[in-house]
Length: 260
Ligand SMILES: [Ca+2]
Image (tube, rainbow, N blue to C red; front, side, top):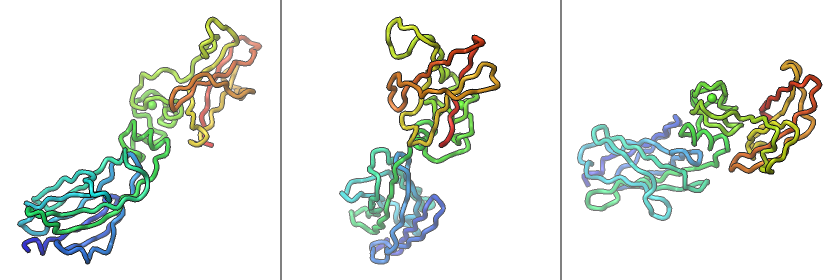
């Protein structure tokens, strides 16, 4: 068999090195199962060396799931014998999935078969938020809580808490002050209110929204009542709190968001 001397090496992109050596057309020496951990919604990937000799250009590489369906895509470089398996995990269930990486000869023979396991964990809400706006769940230089990539003066933490776009500086103010309730009751006037968006999952997300009022921008008093629910906005909800009576006629409001 011309492929008998071919080698398959796998190594894990995250830096955890494992070496699997498999002589093509034999699978009995493959007794190590590489494990790839990924957050659901991210791209899972690893690289492997699929060829250590010439004569494998006609070999087809494929990855099959437990049902025998092709999963992910494989790019290869026949010059250096390297390949990369990459898979969008957005629609895959969380948990462990065993995948078989196969090298198939031009004649349709499975010359090498290397199983590996893909372990997907659920993304937290903030990880889903980073996937939506920064392309991946991992914290990067621009997606960390303290960064402000759109330069609007609001940190990524604040953009997440108030449901804003961290890459668009033109977002509206997250706090609206009005003497009309935002609940849609036509013509209803009442005390001045401060309305803001908060995450419906704020408790799960470890967030606490503290409404504070001040007459002088120096002394701030926490609102004596909890905000009233106003409107459902998907993953966000609008709530509002009435200003307390002000002796000076001038009042200010701020919403502090803190990690619980
Ligand atoms: Ca910002």
